[in-house]
Image (cartoon, rainbow, N blue to C red):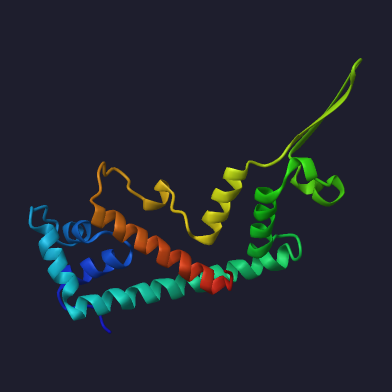
Length: 189
């Protein structure tokens, strides 16, 4: 599909495709800051030609990003062959962190889970203090890797102080789609 004939609609479609909310996209595309921006942006987004153009731009962006990401991934894989953890290995390690029980810890088998080991010898005997990774942190890290958790910084709010529920939902949808795309292109689950 060629670019849209009307320049402001093309600019609007490009902003939407980049993940900008519809009201901000309207304001950027037109330079207008009127109170009806949300309504007009909504109407524009309902137009088939605009919606199709947004999808086309998003596909092109994903493909471009995917090609670059694949090239970088190949370079990293060649350079660090066998040294980097796969997504499955990372998640398995985090699961072990969460399930580890100090009273049943086998240092031969589970020594990689120990973050800190302190041995103190006094007149009354020897004390061994072992610190394991935090279970909550491991759960949060796993949720991030699985794409189930969105950080505030991922919303890219910038200078805006308040977002409407629709704006937050739009940004979350874009983030989740990007993560799903990334997981799909890397073949990880």
